[in-house]
Length: 185
Image 1: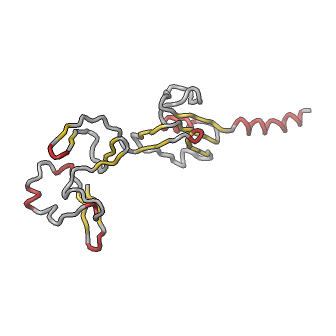
Image 2: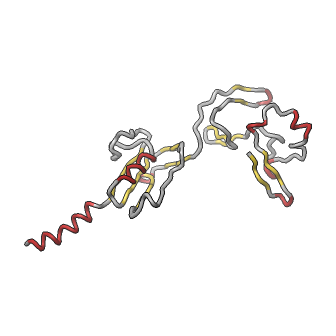
Image 3: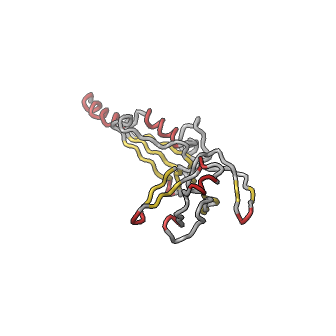
């Protein structure tokens, strides 16, 4: 009888070293246990818990919504030795992980259909409003269907540069021979 019980113990140990599951939701709380009924708020928190877990398989389910990531998701293989990590949407719910910043802006209408707002978010070369990409102020004006949506040989002419009030936040897209280019920020 003793040998049968010992033969059963390795199976129990394998079962105990199974999978740890965490759920992340916009309605969650990082002090919660990470269960389906008590999800975490941030994916980063679920990763930290998974990394610290003794379990060999970690599954992080992300509930429906758009998640703005303040910092990149980093999974260092050295910290996850002998573990298997899976991140997935829960039950095929639509999930978007975004490196963009969600802004709360106060728009002021300017002349010629231009709208202006101040932001402390830093540089950016794209702006989306209600999911629709907007055109940023630029020279030359936006011209769809052309290279870089418009080019001008005088963009960096000394006379133009002298008129710039604040060039610090600008971008320069340089177009070289054979229509290849580069963005300088």
